[in-house]
Length: 380
Ligand SMILES: [Zn+2]
Image 1 (cartoon, rainbow, N blue to C red):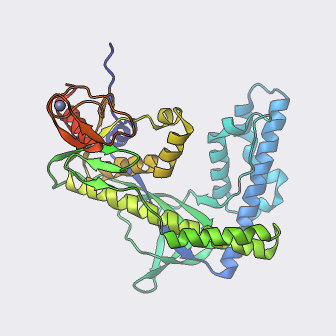
Image 2 (tube, rainbow, N blue to C red):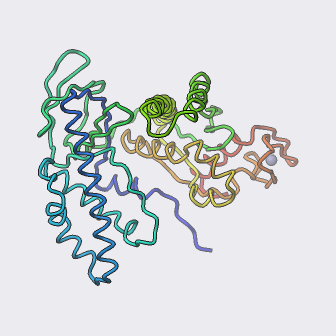
Image 3 (cartoon, rainbow, N blue to C red):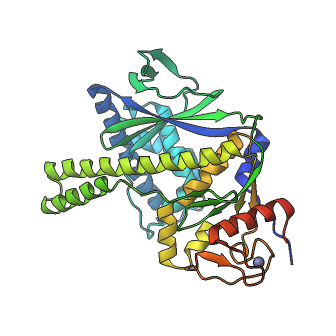
């Protein structure tokens, strides 16, 4: 049998290049005039998007052989001709839109495939290399942007980066945010010692080989009750009316609150793992493949946001110089961590009881120990 290698390609690639991309999210408080301007930009970009999709379908119907080349050459020209409002936007922003559309062109190319005219809630300034920051007080600063002027920003964290790659503006239910993408040099210092095996599960989110258990995130029940009540009210309103829109924004705001709390929880868990250990051993799970098994498991995996968890561990380990090792996931739950015998378990069996050596521990804890052993000593 061919031996499979388990490692993260992304991690390796970033280490080779010796840089890491991080985004910092800040809330901004634009004035009414600036908001109006940015809303207009969203409108123009949305229209551009529709134009691009229609044009692509036209090319496809004509069965032009070199659709891609035509697109690369004439896309921006086409937009400038057909949408006179484009003059109101900085041309870099349109460049970025065309570039992003080009990268996802296969999604839109066939007219038969369903296309959602996605709502533009973000635009990107690709050309900003440094930020023009003016201090206001201890909490707020003013950042100067081209064509928008100074925008008040809640600067809750200092940027630790060499260069800025781009700045993205988003709007989430009346709130405006900027996402600053920076390229950071990974540190070579890490004072922690020791290694830990991590088992990611459904009932317990994370179980480590030193016996720590992190439960899944539970949202604030008062918020859930509130959302349900508002949704009931929403059903009685006629869609499109001002009351309907107001209620919908309220619901979205509460949902954002829950989501933010969840992401914060994930950051805290992963930071504690990375800070305390020099080496982290993880199962190499194929999440997409696992989801194919049954819809119930797929839903549970989505609700636990495993992809977010793995992503956080991955980038933090590169940033803080913590070694990440991916381990073959085969039989990590079934094998006994003491004697190595195979003990069959169903998903509902929560406790590992070994009939050969009498070991009786939690199922996930057993798996975490197996992962650690396999990562350090190799396959047994
Ligand atoms: Zn045993």
